[in-house]
Image 1 (cartoon, rainbow, N blue to C red):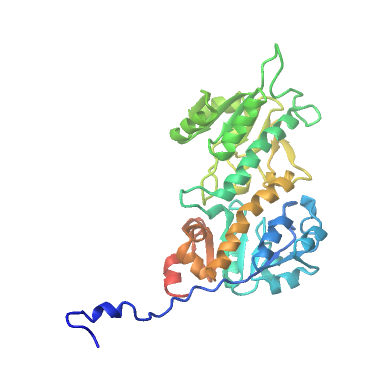
Image 2 (cartoon, helix red, strand yellow; image 1 turned 180 degrees about the horizontal axis):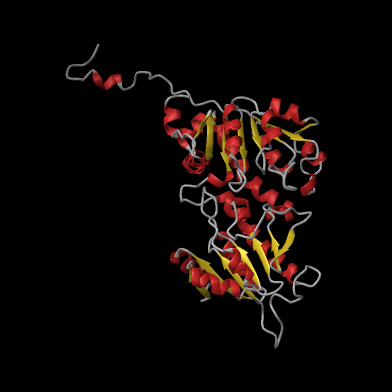
Length: 403
């Protein structure tokens, strides 16, 4: 019996409310196939990362000798709790998530299972519309390294590989300038009484910054060209000193290319093919036995005379200029780059598991949303749709419709 003057509604607040049911964590089987294309030596998940995933309740299924190129043995993986798959087909049949460095080839595409999640590079310079159509027919969710953007607009995985590529590009150029490398037999940084080489870097992004820093550390004279003045300003701020810079106009490019002993192609436009800004005529004006390293070749290349090469045959000579156009430069240092990739992908996989499904991740995680380019049977990246004149669907609409 209630006392006089007491409001009954006070007691309703203490009544039991329906309990909110948390999304149950999803335990995945993560498949790590052996890389078979482009002489790739990296592996997407290292043994230490596999141990973290296993400790969180996931299974890691790694193909036999998938880590061999990065000097990781099957034993190291099994000791971390992973299982070894001796058949590529078995791995694809069992896994919920496929994690690779390079894009799938057409034989691997056939092995994909409906509703699987594929995380890999896309290689915009080589992708074909037929490839995308076959991927869509497989009814999978495909996430591309080149599209994944953090909340601040940065691309953590691309940035990490770009850092490695920028540093490596100067080391490669220094080797190629030597007599044994096919160059004119000069030292990149020069010595007392002998001036250093001229290095022209096209692009002031992550690759350009690390290439510039490395070249300057070796004593080279560096010129940097970019289409955006603010990037050149940021480059100088990071380096803490004034350097030769110019906006990307034809006359500046012609002058800097003609005088270059080393030309580094570091142009990058997120989500689309790299524009070609150095013509064949410009290359013909370069010094005899000078060196070109086109880091942007995996996105189509920014120098007209550049064509994809391999680690077995990394260079060719055209117009008496040595060209290096290997698309996976980071594979030259597979141990370092495998750890870099694994450090970024492992937390991502853990978040998908914690969310309960990829659908829940799409709802809550913008990093995942930006990376998805195929969702079930639909193309969800506008840049790819424009590139190939294909139909495009907004991911948010597909998700809202529960497709």
